[in-house]
Image (cartoon, rainbow, N blue to C red; front, top):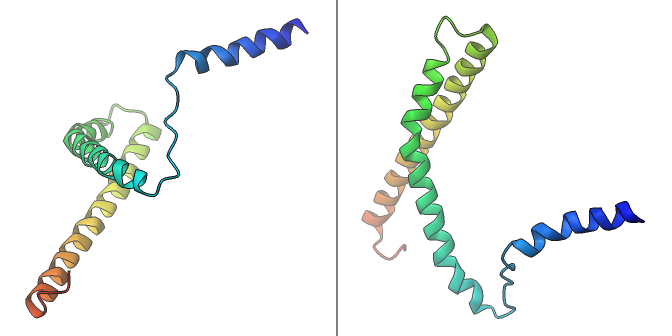
Length: 112
């Protein structure tokens, strides 16, 4: 019985120390209120990740140094190749979408 109460307190303390959760209203306009805030958070997070990208690449390249253990070098090389391919794909898709948008904008001004 005593260990149960101790465990119960261990679970209750973090819940009491944290702020209460924000409960979404059943009002359909409440999502409209939070949507710009969520979008802003995504933009800021993306900017932070982009800014730290160069340091991450430097870290991965540093892990490929001949003095690093083979498993570390292999993991770094694999990550560089995978991330490079994904970045190329995303860049190509962004360029294609921009080309399509320009094409549609030129052919029909009311497509948006």
